[in-house]
Image (cartoon, rainbow, N blue to C red; front, side, top):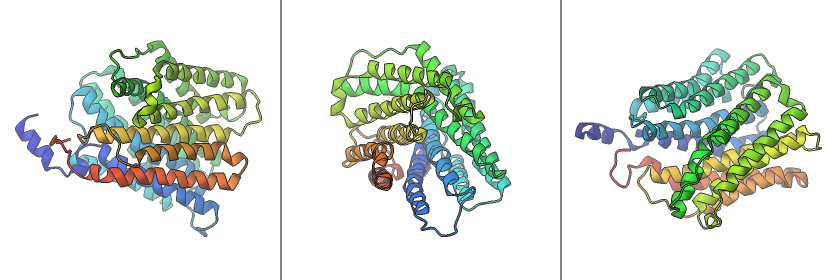
Amino acid sequence: MHVLDRRKALAIAPLLRLAFRPLFLAGCALALVAIPLWLAALNGSLGNWQPAGGWLAWHRHELVFGFGLAIIAGFLLTAVQTWTGQPGLSGKPLAALALLWLAGRVAWLANAPWPLLALLELGFPLLVAVLMGRTLWQVRHKRNYPVVMVLLLLTAVDGLSVYGLVHGHDGWQRQGVLGGIWLVGAMMGLIGGRVIPFFTQRGLGRTAAVMPWPWLDGLLLAGSALVALLYATGPALTSNTGIGVLFAALACGHGLRLWRWYDHRLWRVPLLWSLHLAYAWLVLACLGMALWHFGVALNPSLAVHCLTIGAMAGLILAMIARVSLGHTGRALQPPAGMTLAFILLNLAGVSRVLLVLWLPLGGLWLAGVCWVLAFALYVWRYAPMLLRARVDGHPG
């Protein structure tokens, strides 16, 4: 790095030097607030206060397009610097992007006028897609063009969700969110399919990498995008054998990947087994949806929560725990409490998917407590790292 460029970079407040810093912190702060608010709303403790569309619409929307998208954006806008060699977003532009995300959260919660809500809500994912696309296009980094495609699709289904909200059509709002959930699943397959085997190889000191199968990668991405489209347009909302076959194929494909990556030594490394367990929840979510579409008496909400809690939140927590260490110049050894955080989040998934079958309220509340404790541990241990300069003196 040029000396002058280095000085400029070091003059930026540490929180705004790379996108993972403010967006990881903001996303986890929302995770800490969103579940207690939802449980309080279910308990009738919030009186007449209602966000736009009501608490159910807010809950399902914010955990995907608020929490999930913040972490995805933070990861991608940081990783793109490594992928392309181009400078990552930092300083005032990064602050403006983070404030746009925050404004969208406040607007939805405060029941803002719908034109303002739509502008703020859709502006964030669209801007992230534009920033990613521009950086990738500058160096013709074609391998990651699908990332931009998924971001644009996420913007579209978020638009459907907002459209349903504006027109008082809960079905459209729900379809948009379900489409978004499975697009996040597509992003998990796309990014996780690259980083999980790489992190496993590095973490275990393997000399040989598990080589990807491009045909499988392509089929999983296309299949996940198709599932999202089927939810957004409606056909996947009712049981259908053909869609069940699609979900079964996705379960087999993701399961095959997981089997190829497996090494029994990973259970000694929390930063690895947490990634593999999260990906296993994705397999379970696809299997659950396949069974429901084949006519098994199974509540599809349980499969959805396999995806949102076990897979999405599980992979998020595992990834941000590792990425935050690496990009702040620290050794890849999670701080005290993070192994417990990984266990708690998986326990949240088990409670919300299985325990609720026997203890509906108990399972729900235990899942909420475990979720909050898991992300509270991350914020407690990692906020000081995100707010301070790298320990190795690098300006990132």
